Length: 111
Image (cartoon, rainbow, N blue to C red):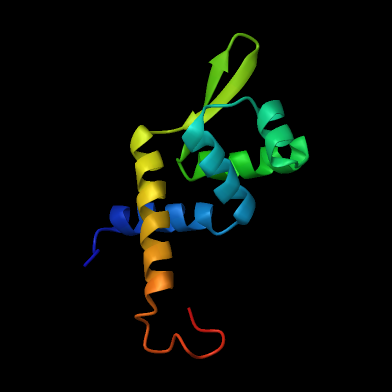
């Protein structure tokens, strides 16, 4: 059971980051390769302004870092273990979703 405030805070920050589909797409893209904002915006087909707001949230959550490269900035995951965590979480969620072990899975709106 999580009892330390830092453990709870870390999970809450991760959950906040994953709560938005665009932030999920950004994390999945950065899991593959670090990228400059202009390239990310083009890849994800979103405006630079919208991307900037989501990157700020991900930075505040401690999941991505901005790395200066000359006059530009490149974004990457703050730690390579985050890529593994994202993969593990996605795999686990898909396994549970396909497993139908939830007792209420047959009800509409459940799981």
